[in-house]
Image (tube, rainbow, N blue to C red):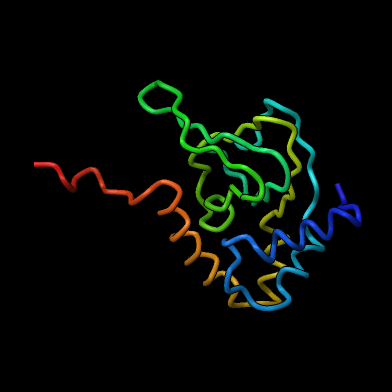
Length: 155
């Protein structure tokens, strides 16, 4: 759904302040703003499925979501994200399937940016992916901690 004027202000603020976009070229947020769409998602709805090959970045403007992963047959809560935040960056920028299920905890307002739209931004700002990928690595460490390969640390 096209953004309403009041949503444009909020979405631009998100694009300019979320740590994912730190170091991105000036003007990139304004170009992305024209390409995002607003989605109001009700309580208890799945926004993204584990292993889904989605190519959408979700900017959480209002509300909260829980990130779930099935581990050994058990459903485990990995994180709770509260606005302002984002998810879907892995499938968006690494072109790999989603690593978890994301479900709303309440009614949420989410701004979505699909990969084909982001590619239009990358044409205008060729270096935009470098700071995003660097930020993703740093943010992943903060969210889930260091990932140790299974063979390390075992005797």
